[in-house]
Length: 195
Image (tube, rainbow, N blue to C red):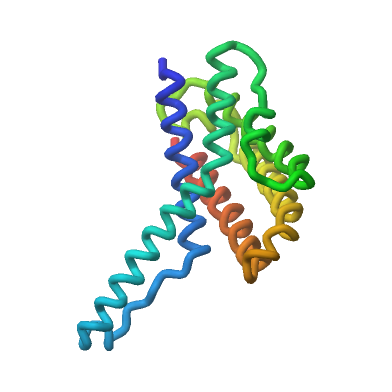
């Protein structure tokens, strides 16, 4: 039997794959040109930009995983204690404006419920846990669509606050939402195509 710790590690590794896939589409990768190879100073600049790109993707992935990690912790505590998860713990940790908390709470509730079910199933990797909980691809995709909708609702509530500090926030959020939905579908396909 797999321990809660092992399942948590498997789930967060799965979520990290999603975060990195989304980061590839949100953060633009620098392009290498012939001039950068022929003129060493340009190559040094390219190497600097590539290093910044890699660090930026890591920071993006870490920030993308803040709420899922918190929701997973609450779900793990609930499974261990044999009680209902207290999603208000996650909501209280949020630095979101008060008028966005209702949308945030709904998103956290869906994530926590999902993780609670995965942690209650048995399996060594997240794909196995997902198969055991959802049974078939269509059921898992229904959950993914619900999660995408809840994330969009939260992002819509948050956007007016972000436009004050971030240029092109609408375009950035749209790319993130589209990438997350696309990669969730791809991961679902990979999970349920393997036997």
